[in-house]
Length: 614
Image (tube, rainbow, N blue to C red):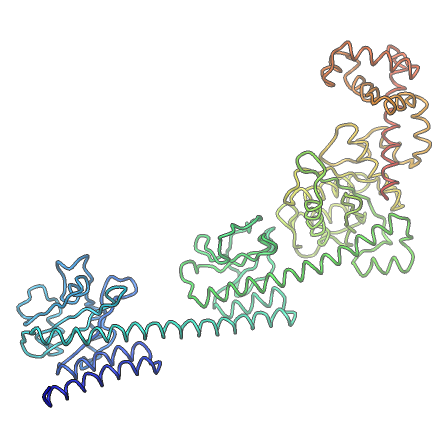
């Protein structure tokens, strides 16, 4: 090896070392690209050199690093005449052919290339010939290394080999620089993301609540933000009154679904508690335009909002337990006028000095009493309704039914309450005001209707029967027992669903207000006691047969059809009923006595049930 070759080799080794050192020093991708162009220009004695890479859409090659080229030339090419990437290597610009084929492509004289559309800017820049060599890595071609000469020039094999050799090292350096840039970007994203999370969490810890979190998110995104509950209520709003969909929706999430999604032109973020959507965050007009950091901010906001809503839910559960304890004490006979009870109620927003109606709601699912989870969700809807009424009704679960002690002169809220579509602000206000103006059974029926709409809106509840006491009953325990007894009477009569006022039950409603199950049962036993004992001892159904016979207009065939029996079986049972009870069912007076006894028996059982469950 002669001295010139040794010098050249040292130059090449020094250049490659410089590229490696630049990457190891953590220099950015742009610096490495410029260094690659400068190294090629210096080693090969080029007039100009450029590194071209695909744009984000991979439709064009743009100049990303250069040496000797002017800023104006680079800007004009990149903005006005980027190198279009053709589908294959059969046509297009030299750089496109080199990129698609993975092989060098040279032009000795651009003036002789009829399809060379960059001739104008080339003449301004001052070059006549060019060589484009692909930058090849194990994963494919990542760009091209272009050399430009100001004179017409035939690029020989040795020159091409040298540029290819340099391109191999340059491709490795560029790939490493990209990896480092990506790592730096990820690190920066993580660090900024952590700061965002800390900021949102700090707002929540400092009792900023949902409103504070929405405000911080608005500042971070620079866009309006709406936090909406699952019933459609606005929990918080920041940055103006955007027009958002009114239906936030209930339900469980898909297991693979992300927190951040899109709905129309809006970005929507799920806030999840126990696998269910507890709230949603809406950002208007940002669909398809979220930066990675914005998406991280929304994800963090979802987590912090989940914690805030969990805190709220826990506080509400504690408060609801206190209401349940207060109701249980009242129904057990605690004096509502005693200072201790009155103070407990006052702290929870209830005024026990007023007269109250007693409303009792039995919720059902699939035709049967609803499970505990559905009852709790129904209670949450009822409590949300009660929150919008003043003085606030006392609502709690007692012995598997929802009980509401509703102030007779209640009025609606001055502003909308956080209630759902079925019991929304307008409904909450309307019922409060209407109950305040209505009197007697009209007030009770209206309160019962709206309470029923509230509990039926809960997920997992199919229907509900709501019974209401008479407004003349001042004693809370008596009012509750009457309403609970009305539920039992209605069930015996096959009246499930809807609202039940005492007026709806006729004589039974009147008897319920007597509140003396001992005297009522004694009356019923005088007529029906033998039938009750026979059914108990023999597993028979004489009492049910009698009830169905009377309800069927004394028609044995209709009775048989209702009981899925043969008419002869019905006749045999009726004869046994007459013998045991001493009734002649052909006598109109006996029929009246039997029907009255059944009514009294239902009332007595309802009163017994209410007393046992108080």
